[in-house]
Amino acid sequence: MSQKGKFSYESIQDSEILLTYLKALVQGFESGSMRFSVKDEEIELHPSGLIHFAVDAKAKHGRMKLNLKFAWREGEDDPRDGHE
Image (cartoon, rainbow, N blue to C red; front, side, top):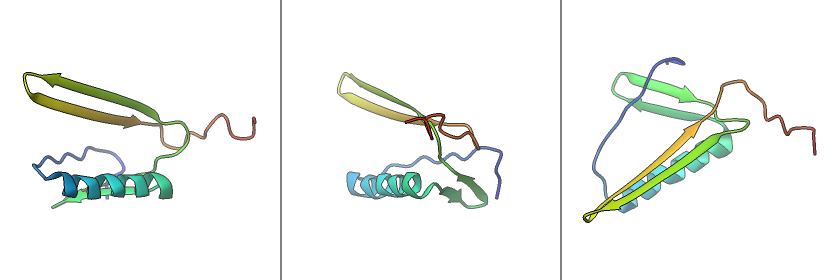
């Protein structure tokens, strides 16, 4: 399993399948571990601490687009911990 590298996957699915995938992402954030794999490509991510989150939504000429982006640094603790 690669800790460095890139995983890419693209497909066309109905909204029910996409909902299942989104629920799996939520579970990954809750557990702190996400594993992505297809064929011989595999990567495991461990979201923790502060996570940058971006949403980009577009509607143009009947074409809709939604991008979600999450980014964090591995091993970086939440600076708010212990500073309540």
